[in-house]
Length: 266
Image (tube, rainbow, N blue to C red):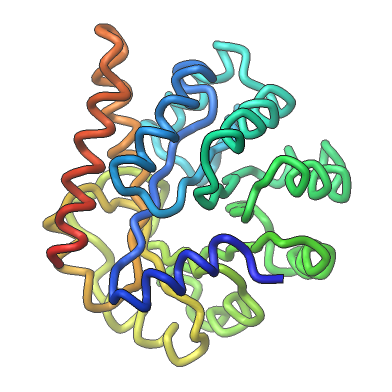
């Protein structure tokens, strides 16, 4: 079954466009604002949207997204409330939606129960940053029954395991631009171009760069070596900047509009 993610990426490729994938933590600062943010980002030009499931120990995330997770948890976000949020979103939009979720949350919920629920509400893909390669196979086999993609992360430090990680991947490959956790960077991995070229020899799935991508200048430097960009911490910072005067949605919308305009010019 072809997912909405694959359909979207194929359509972008036909028009020689890069994918603009944006991330928000579900429930930050509250679920009502997340609802408005998703619709606003789609209107501003986002092609695919990641919804982070807030988790108390987000090992892959830097301080910006950690703060977002804490705000969401403090506001009462939980799995069932986020599922209800997606149900409401699906009444308004068919944009591809991806859960970024830590494996402990999935395991605790129950693998099959979680997948069934994701399918029912219209989730199109899963990114599980702490899912070991050795344990991915079980979930990968289960997900063949669902119109959802299990999207792997691969980093320059993955080295000898790159080929195995991207083998049988679906949707897109989440290419980590630098070592460490999520967050804005002044510089990216030294041999990022070589890393991307090596990945390309292993897979024809779209290669999307994330971790540290925060502005059009960085996108300009990378546009010739990837099929799209994931913007996370920079979006969360716009949300934070608007917390006091409740301008988060407006700030995020303007930010995405600028990136979308650049993407099409690029």
